[in-house]
Image (cartoon, rainbow, N blue to C red; front, side, top):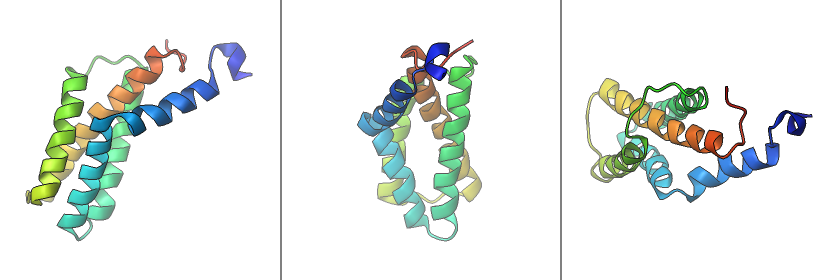
Length: 127
């Protein structure tokens, strides 16, 4: 039924899984958030990955709905991936509010890049 409406579930699943899995910046960010959270300890191993995933979901929705909120998406995806790996390697200590803010900001960009890729590939009905 969905195929008749212009939505290809196989293409959407393939794009959705391959884009972050094959994108080095996305892998860096995911590993960076996880390792940084683990090195910080406490509640961070639960809170930071959850915040990153929720922010990615919000960024994806913004991209699919074509909300022009974020600029320089691809450069920010790379910069955030590198920044998160750097923070994890050095176990950078900031206040938890600042860390969550950075993780959410970076997650928005990663989700926006993923949503833009899905929408531009014609896998999601936009508009």
